[in-house]
Length: 420
Image 1 (tube, one colour):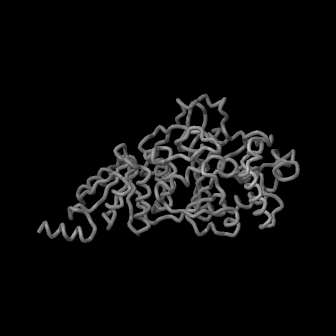
Image 2 (cartoon, rainbow, N blue to C red):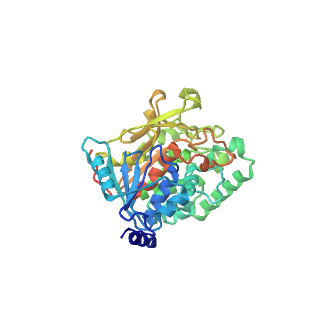
Image 3 (cartoon, rainbow, N blue to C red):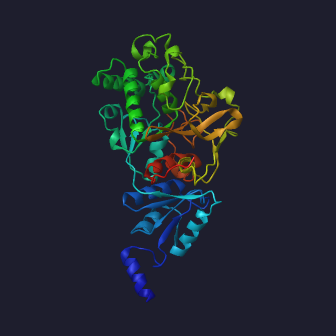
């Protein structure tokens, strides 16, 4: 009988041993390709195969029924996996279900439609999210200001904000890079887009863009941002209708009383911040911790991920799944969030308590959610403009990049009522 079973299994493209009918993908230290494992989860969801996300079990492992072609795909991508029997998987589920075990099962049901808000002329050093999506082989659609203002956001489940400057100051690169062709083209493109949509200034157009994004979240969308797309997003919201930018950016002086007119009720994460008025200073506000006050350097810059109750707080538990709880820090134009400027309803998920800075946080708005992650590139401590992009094949187990990918799968989860 056994040879016949093996022949049938081979014909179906299934496992070599017919009774071993689950695939288990560990996400602890034994995994050789943590980042690509997220891609295989997405690959399964796109083929209508449900995936179990085993929260806090061996680093946030994945499991599913064995599907046709799955083992071949796992092998091609170099992902560590095991084929296990129904009984073996039942034992894992029983362990997770123990009342005292800080573990749970999250059912992933559908492949989220992913949009990345990024300029068409993006430079290759620009964005960690597009790098990791490409490495993990997760498909996404690039959109930008025209698309957002034309109303495309409701077509997507998840939106990533490229390292954008929503204040309309072109990254505050004027002092160092105003003579670079890419900077000048960026300004021309933005001014042309503003004109197409009948805005007198780029800052006004960006204000309309962040308003559309707020509507996307409130309607049930998932928004993720890194680096300067976090603080400038809230600055733009707080300053809607104000002129906060100087003449080299928009042709006329800024309102000298803009600071006193900021409305912090509109923002997602931050309150009571002071904007940086100097157009030559490479900084937007005091939200971002400055190097001299942080008290850390490359060799001792780390942040700790919080531990949440998997059975009672599944959302932050999903977003902090990792094989490491201590994550190497990394810089960016916005490196770290000043804790005292964060609103009280924000869920902090990663911080450096000694320096009073938060690196990773999450919140809700209406029916949707948002996540802010500070810094530019988790595997390049001080990634400079015009440097080569990171080669993720050299960092397949990056804990810092895993946090990005947790957010990618978050919209795929079957909704559970949060118990706290």
